[in-house]
Amino acid sequence: MKSSTKNQVEGTFHQVKGKIKEIAGKVSDNPELEAEGAGENLTGKLQEKIGQVKQVLGE
Image (cartoon, rainbow, N blue to C red; front, side, top):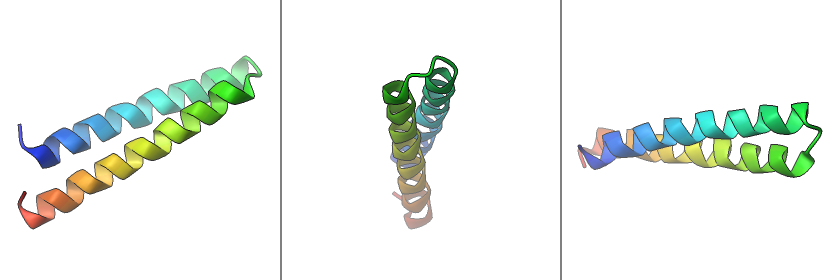
């Protein structure tokens, strides 16, 4: 698997995982879990963008 594809897949995974944590934090009234989920979601978006850039550059 190419590095760019791997970054995109892992980024999407982290976004989904982060979104689930955010929702679980809201439902359970746990601001720490909600913040952790938001951070993981952001990290996933960043990783996915890195994969897209690598794909454009042909890496």
